[in-house]
Length: 374
Image (cartoon, rainbow, N blue to C red; front, side, top):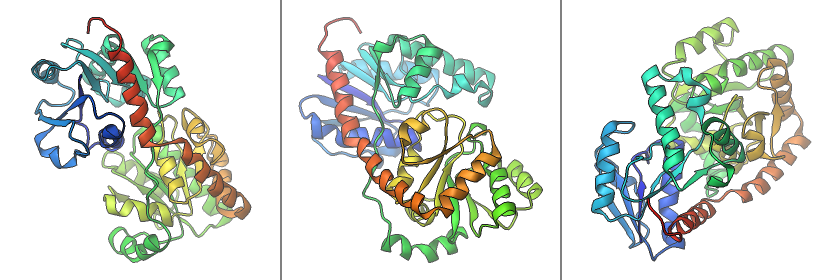
């Protein structure tokens, strides 16, 4: 059988990790079927070629375009595909083979104001079409599954929940300690600090985190600075205005986009990692912080409690006071910190990229085992 995978988003932050690890581990569990990987020509070096049954096919069609809805099905036909996997919601509805789609979340339907109107209607139409034309829908949490049922009207039995994984071979301890001068020199960051790492869309609730941090400085005079790491071009002026209002100019660091080589020591040197988000389909950074032996505090909403389990402090993301109290306990209660670290290591055992790949291949095999039209 010939199975195609769209890898054109392999350099994206979250979905890129998903695609890369799926492709990397496919040969561990399936050396019989042929896998055709569609990719941008310039991304060839990012594709992990770990087995002889992986074939690379370049494709230049822009993401989120009408062009991809034509060129990809043509190449599916040329490659004689039996199944095509779209690891994002853009699954061409007219194609010569069966399809499976991964819908990580329905954020565009929950927060339509994030997109221009034309882009929103395109996303809504493509998500609806993908949910109906796919033989199976994969998603990354039970919370996202219920959102897909609610917003797309899909029967539960069509949806398979397969958790993302986590790379646990991360550096901490001596390696991270050696990176301290580099973090200081390149990013202007030195311990002690509280860390947020991610994007800066409104649902990430960064404004409330800044207010909670301001309360911590007023009430407890904590020595920690607040590091808000990630690309923040669109919101930077708004954040800086709030930081000025809270008189935190010397205490909040906005390093912007962090190069991959600095992410591991940034996690490892933090005293606490905080996710104040109002919505997450999974929350990979929570697990990454745990893997770096860093205690975690999370919003008690969406998929975050499901993913973190008992290994994180929880707070109400709508309350700066409650968030501040939770963060302070996470910094000051040493017994709690030890418990969080122990539970965090135990929690990581539930998330494996190898298991994700194995279960995804099982979905492929289930679809291919039943005769029928695409």
